[in-house]
Length: 580
Image (cartoon, rainbow, N blue to C red):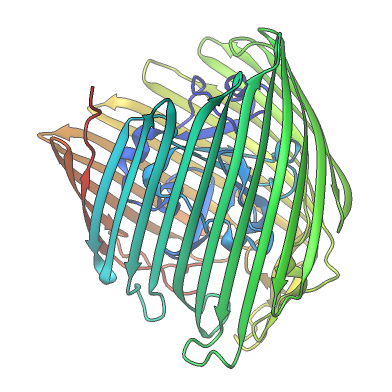
């Protein structure tokens, strides 16, 4: 949902509201999250344009944007980097109970000027609730032996804002070897400190899951633990200046067993620490002039039984200038310099323009440069089915887009975007076309690739009493230097999608959300699926029924195996009205 009046943090370092008219930013609002309560974050993201959620099971999913690879997307929680330096497979190994999510911001398009490496296809920022009162509880059960429960509470005590939440889900899996157990818990708080406000949080996520055929033709098992902590301080600094300072830490432990019942054959244990900090000063020279100047530091360390021990430090400085008001023409110009102890220096400039062209209609255009260094897994990982290469070069990109946003009538919106992205030294796991499963995947640099895409979203509210969203995308993908090879990720983007969502209003307490999707991945057959959410509300209690993959569409997941067939999941939720 494109909302120019919603203040977000992902689209600019200066003024987020104005920048939404110049960059392609979607917001999954609290209203939509409430309509899909109990669904996983991956399931919710999958219903949005340009987002490719490439799941293996509800416990583990890869994510891509605009035809990118899974390594070319940056995931943030409250602006803090949580993408995994070891491998993009772990980017959604979050520690955020869904009941504590206030909104999700999606920047589609290169954001390296704003956030540095990995932000090539786009950025996803998960924003948690820090204002109450809010309470929720849920229990659920369904197909494949699935059960779950969650609790969340946000409130204020003695002037201090507090938040706490926990999720637990388990399942036997939709096929043998895909069982899972997931626990996520988070606590946080905020309090006034001097002229500003201090925010702190700590969280843990535990995922144990059958990984049959996930990374090769083996009955594998995986056990991951994610711990995060963050601090933020925001305050005015006299006159028109404000300052933000932040620090964060993330630890990800992964124990991978190649043959579940025979761990002695092959095991891989990784312990990955990531710590970072940033300071950004913002200056509002006038209502239509803003400036941001910032610096970041980052340290990543890996202790691994199979990859070896590695460390990388990064630092960056950046600035962004904003000219213009959200109601008129605007310009955002930014530049960022990154230094890595492993891969040297890279400069990422960008320019974003926006202007009204007719009543209720706005044009936008942007161009920017981005980069991504190979992960430790791509460089050093070796198992019987996958072999990394220490000689990989960093990926480099130029990307641009032109878009139009319009609100033809009250309650209707239309957004169209055309984009192009050019890559050099694109990285993927590849092997010869038609090779048997016994042939290992090897990482390689593809000489170059060109992406050209178009995205269209139309929304109509209260049309025949229903809120409608229709979305579609097409992608032309031309690699150079990959002839005779098939790839796992970068060489297999989604090339066509058509989707629609209908949110029916409550009638005698019964409400429905219907999602349909028709899509095709490069070199694969198209598929069509539908998902239905039914809800019945009575006072503070709601009964839900989710029918997933109603059409029992057969297509391949990220492990090359058929996705889950039709399933039914029911839940009972409690959302008490705030007490006066």
